Image (cartoon, one colour):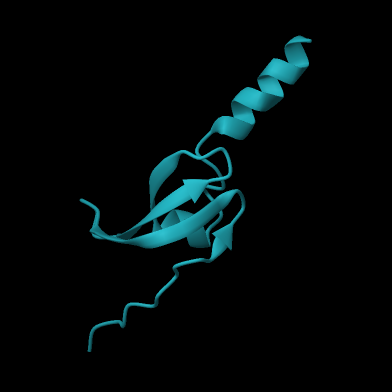
Length: 70
């Protein structure tokens, strides 16, 4: 039996909010369209969301770097 698709719309993972299911990636993982708190939209695999591998679009890294330069 196949696995059922769970609606994750509206769920928050770090700085990302899931907007919609976006199909499967080349590796066979489910992908979701997410919006970061900075406004950028990003595709993230379900594996990265659950393992907390992707918590933002990368904007927090740049913010921390800019603050360190000051």
